[in-house]
Length: 58
Image (cartoon, rainbow, N blue to C red):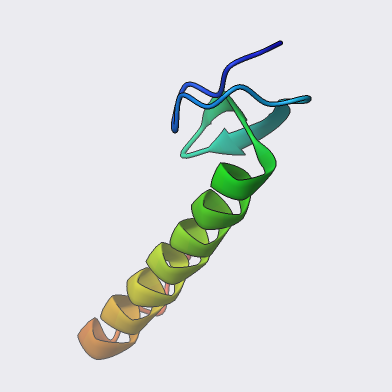
């Protein structure tokens, strides 16, 4: 059985996801947490851009 590198639990299946430009293999629970963290990071970056008045593209 494969082992999740993030939580070190044995799982039936690992999912490949791209986070910050790197591919990672995570279990389903860690995948959900990583997606939530990425969404929060994106929203905070947008808030910073709005506060700075940045109108260009990233």
